[in-house]
Length: 113
Length: 113
Image (cartoon, rainbow over all chains, first blue to last red; front, side, top):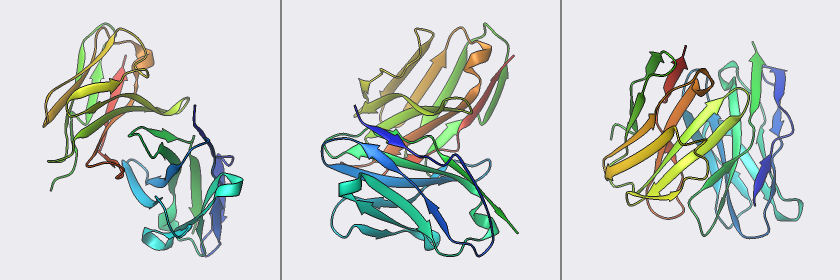
């Protein structure tokens, strides 16, 4: 069965700092990968997704992620965070042949003004 | 489009009562997912439907939980009888087409006293 691991549960950083959140998955087949964000009190929203092609994916709000197949990783990055990036971030995996998403445990990010 | 609509947004009930959560998917989306989010367990998939048919209900915690999708524009998640450990935020998400991302509703925050 597939699984997704997000090793950092909590991250605290200051505005303008760079952010990188780790995501590793376990699955032997071809996958689609997603990063979702959940702002305080809100629902999950898609930040970016990888289906195929260029492994460096750019999403909304200045976020990007890189798919490294050899490392089974899909890390999320943002060069300079803002206070408004305070949220919980979820990495998710989907088998290409299915519909079901498997989510990681989430990483809570607090950006101090 | 109004997005995924869930009702009620908040529900407070007493242990033993029946609770019904409702979801209206985005028009044209043929897959619908019910998730539960808690601090302890994170985001868990309970059940999902394709074309109104339940495909995978392995995440439904026990027989007290049931879900239906009588038509393409409506789904319910019922808990009977409810227990305090059912307190959580329940999200409905829908997906249109094969391989596309899931769109989440605003969630229902359930508190069982």
